[in-house]
Amino acid sequence: MIKQERARRTRERVLTAAAEVFASQGYSRATLSSVADRIGMTKGALYGHFSSKRSLAGALIDESRQAWTSLRTEYDTPGADAGGVLEDVVMGFAGRLQSDVRLRAAVRLAADCPVLARALSDVLVEVHNALMELVRRAQRDSGFPAYSPRLVAHLVMIVMYGLLHAPPGRVDDDRVAGGDSLWRLLFDALSGADGPGVLRAGDDAVSGP
Amino acid sequence: MIKQERARRTRERVLTAAAEVFASQGYSRATLSSVADRIGMTKGALYGHFSSKRSLAGALIDESRQAWTSLRTEYDTPGADAGGVLEDVVMGFAGRLQSDVRLRAAVRLAADCPVLARALSDVLVEVHNALMELVRRAQRDSGFPAYSPRLVAHLVMIVMYGLLHAPPGRVDDDRVAGGDSLWRLLFDALSGADGPGVLRAGDDAVSGP
Image (tube, rainbow over all chains, first blue to last red; front, side, top):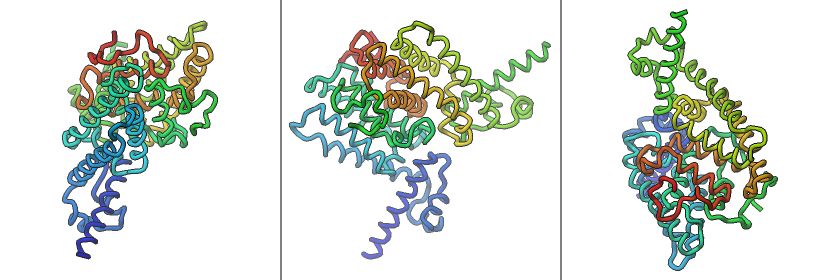
């Protein structure tokens, strides 16, 4: 039992290290050696847990499916205001992308490797469809502007890819790079909000009011 | 003279082929051989024009600087309505990104390779600053919503990166993939437009009205 628990912990460490490598370097540049090095492991020991770069990537992708499902269940509760649910899901996913390198790696893998992208396809299609449905409800129940739900969902996903692939720390200010204020702006613009969430011109201090 | 003209044309063909390879595969996976193969050239002949993958990338980046300058000069004419200029520049740049694989390659290179990104940094900072300035003017002169100009500019660039890196043809419908309707939605949302540019809910045929 203790042995099993140790193996489980090592597996977790390997997955996190792999995610860090994938998220920063992409699939094609990542190597099993760099993952092993990162946690002071031999490549042989790593092979005891994952037989290939692809199986590592596959494990991260499976996990992202669970992350999405739990996020959706957490916010989309019966009776909740549709606009609020959409906001919580988008902002919650954005926050999770920032804090969870494993989720970030999974999303980045979608764009990096056609073979893996097929494996991810189900998750991405599900996220896209769920967003579309949430936008429709927010338009019907919460007076959101009548933009095409398909396009709104697509734009949200494109911003996600953009944040994962933008060159870090050059164009964007460090305070902006994480993306929190960016998601807030996107959400406000798409929901037609002109309320407290809106960042005022001249208020380039970026942190919201 | 005829010899020079022929050399110039070959150089152009090489640059376009290189751009196609960079735009679809990114910097690290691109090889000089695949560029040469693409236009039925020997690798030796290609070396007569460009000595390395990096010099090819450098030439594309230099060119993107000119593309941006000419775009800006074309639309930002004295006396033009600020909101209109912003729209023209954003939509014009989006259209150019779709039609011009060399520009697309240059922007993608920014995210792919830290060394090249430094070379591109000037262009990207200039684009970002110009967008910020256009947003400020559109807010002052054309009643655009008072979102932070820095964030708006940043969001536009993030969407650009996103479109260049999203996995093709899965989440997004083919008709959407090019990005034209997406840019239109983004522009409408950021400008607070509720006019003819807005795609109506249920009108998921995607092509604008």
